[in-house]
Image (cartoon, rainbow, N blue to C red; front, side, top):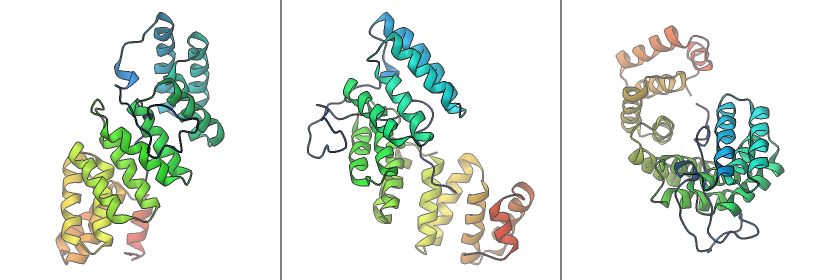
Length: 267
């Protein structure tokens, strides 16, 4: 299973208060919190017009039309030049097309316009993690997760876990994924990664437990069925192993996991 971020779709990140000139160097800075701009009423008619274009742009972003998303963000900024969600949308699009300098510039502008927005903290935090600035990214993700107005705390908690994995800090990652599941018991990514960490640590009963929770909520994927098969193989449960093998054969026959099973590559 690829370690995808949880930042796509809807609004995503948050900002430190006071907005330093370089938001990536925020250690020790006092912060404010605010509701996500996506949850608030636009302040002016111009902002209302801009929001329509940002919402449309986000819809295009979600289906991979980053060019159209950028066009809609530009139209929004023509209506309201300081409208933070438009800069955030531009940053997300630039990040996905790997124009990282432009992404950083627009994330930082969004943060200057709307310090305290947890969506912006989440997005920028993950961006920094993906750019090799994991420690700075973790600070932004922590701000988002602590914001009492944020309804999606599971997102920055999951992203923080992914960030710790990038640093090779599995215990810290596991703790973040556990918090993410407490915030959203059906967080598929966090449940899978908890199972994966437990499996790699030789805690096969725990891996099985996490996979059961995952499959009850979402059903299996190729990756989770493959992890389940290997877990049951380690536990000596031939019937459960065969059941997972049958699922891979019937539902995921084109997957790399099925190929690995057929080749006997269990580790």
